Image (tube, rainbow, N blue to C red):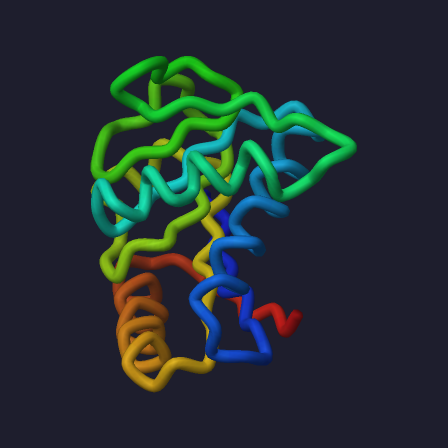
Length: 139
């Protein structure tokens, strides 16, 4: 069954959430997992694409937007199905992915923005209702 984790950040900054997504994508790729970063919209996809080019000066994280190469080691998209199953999904969207079962691991990144906390609590309950056992991880 898919492993679901909610990584909880201590601050409410959207930039911290994006950096955490990049760090998790880098770690997943380094461990040989295909990674899919699911964004809320095209604007967030473009911002993450740019951030992945520069967030670590010492190491390049090979990535592409789904529309350009769905088989890249790290793929950035919205609601597309993963081209390579059983990888890591880093979900930055406010809803559950329609493809949760195609991943071996799903990480939801939560920060302290009140509206995001509410959405993530609802998502936590939805995962439970669907038979998953989501875990909370404090960062």
